[in-house]
Image (cartoon, rainbow, N blue to C red; front, side, top):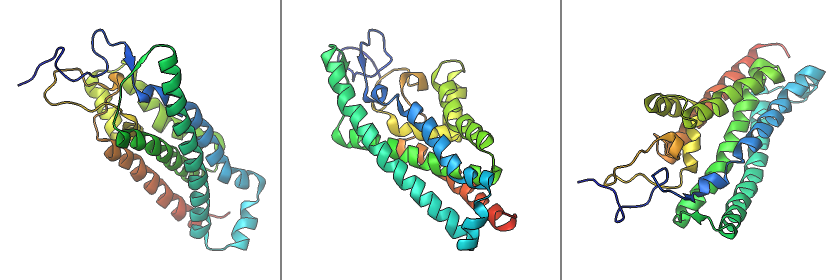
Length: 234
């Protein structure tokens, strides 16, 4: 049995909806993500551009270890920064919404924690992906463009209602943008008839499954980067 109405759970995207979710407070993730992608790419490409990579590899001939160390550093730093920024956005965003008289859909604290930690992890893994592609391409502009096209563009196309719902669902399943599922605030209710579409804040994959898609891309890119770093001349 399904249905909708006053006795059904409240979800976003329905007629008469005047509230917002914590997800909307994390919209600044995009600006931070782009900045992190640029910094993570330059973290390796600047050495190629200035010829310092030869000095680095001469000091530490084990190239795989060099790249792993860079991945750990950039991943750790961006995770901590993303965690602080996401927590601040959720806390102050809710306070501003209440001050304006806007209704914020309540979520259990484990969901709120998952959204904050997941956003930080998303930014950190995206930074590692950018580092890996920067190693592969050796060009900042090309690597930054590729990462943005792989992560940000599919998300925008998926939630902006420019594609059919089916196409948006698949785009948010098979691209790194699937990781944004960690920011879904409201669950899907099997007993409620509603439009659970990406533009309403719902994702086709479970939060951590979507995040695992991004991790898989980052792992593949990092593996390719290690192979090419070992085979190519500095």
